[in-house]
Image (cartoon, rainbow, N blue to C red; front, side):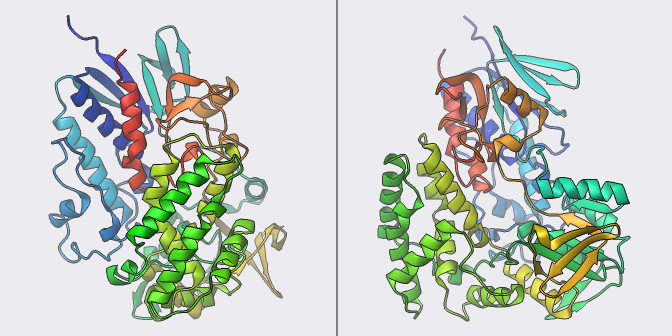
Amino acid sequence: MTQARRRVAIVGFGPRGLGALEALVRQALVTGTSVAIDVFDPSRWPGAGPSFSPDESEICLLNLPLRSISLPPPPPCSWVQQDFSTWLKDRLQDGAQDGDAYLPRALLGTYLHERYEALLAQLPEAVSVEHHQARVNAAHQDQTGWRLQCAGHSHGPYEHVLMSLGQPQTDPDPQLERWRKHAHRHGLQLCAAYPGHALIEAADAWAGRIVGIRGLALSSLDVIRMLTLGLGGRFEGTRYIASGREPARIIPFSLDGQPPAPKPLNAALDARFDPLPDEDAAFEAALHAALSGAADAGPSALFGALGAAVARVIHSVGGAVEQDAIQDWLQQEVAAAGSQEQLATSEALRCGIRQAEGQDLPTIGYTVGQLWRKWQPLLRRVYDSRPIPPNTARAFTAFDEGLKRYSYGAPIETARQLLTLIETGLVDPRAADDPDIRLRPEGWEIQAEDTAVIADVMIDSVLPPPALGQVTEPLVSGLLETRVLSALDDGLGARCGSDAVLVRADGTPVQGLGLAGRLSNGSSIASDSIHDCFGDIGDRWAATVLQPT
């Protein structure tokens, strides 16, 4: 008897969708299953997604050095013959093998798109894949399975649908909502940070103007590079050579004015923060205990293992630190993330650069952040494999989010460039709370101590939080209205199983519907990493989808 071909859909097809597709094809090979897979994404670069689009500006860099990007061919599949670094050899002349280089995100996107095309060219006979260049607006289930709606067209039925949506449409926060109305009322420009090529094109008309940037995280550093290098400026050593097309002044601001710390300069300095095998074991044991214990367990259960590793790292480079000081720092991080740092932006940059270069001893915070970065794969593997109580999920995700100022740190060259621009006066960073931003007909008046400046252009570089309640994407909001989607807790993403299958508020799984990525925040953790897109969740999802019926 001929096996009936099963039908599966993947909605949203950036790197995470590609990872899910690869896992599904592998599982089909292992089980001998015949499956037809439809992928839905409006992009013309399937596999890359907006963040890694091959046509994005080369000004936008990866925040990982080449040596840290491990995307090996997925065994036992023959369609991917090269990992990213090997693939680069044929495409870059100088610096292709420099493991400390931070490359354009567009380059990784080109690799991911070609990886997808290589898969299509070598699909096994029992598997078919079709890309629909369309946005899915709604999903509903009937007796035959799940059906998807795209601009008046219906697709399906599907036995299973995985949503891997990346950053969906969301409601603006109250500040941004007021600013949008203000900009519309007075004919002001309020722009998004991405896509980068569109921002650079718009910025060509901003010479001599004052531009504000909401946020001082990694996206704002991209924006600053676009408004300088993207407009023809260049750096020569510690000097910035202006093109004359730049704004008169660039004013990035955040609540605390603290920039992300740069990652260690090179592999040798980075290796100082490698956990020892016994530290890995202690961290994993503490993590299992924290996640399997009381419903109110939190990251403080990890502080013994984390503190011991921090002390060992600092002592190994000639520093001295007491466990009480480490534990105080960690407890303060839980109470108010980042409140330990009181330096002005430029001095914080100098301190971060000196630590990244190995000139200064690492501080407690810098060491905690680098260890947390090293432990992210272990954190994901343990955390994502089980259901997490809401209180525990909220505490762990908040701790992880706060430490991103270190664990998702900037390329050191970007930090150096920012410091140069601050010293020249072209960039004027500020700490500014909502009351410090006054809306004027001519723009945004940004206060800082005793001075104020009016920006007549504003760029929003703040990434919306992965909170399900703020999402306005029609597909997601429709499933929320019908209670198919349920938030794990206020401010968190959807309730999902370890195989990405959605779980209703009453604890019952949603047959045939899964969700992976940022919108599962809380059910999963640290999902913004490119490596997470090709992680264990995709394999567990594929095994669930193609289990015998």
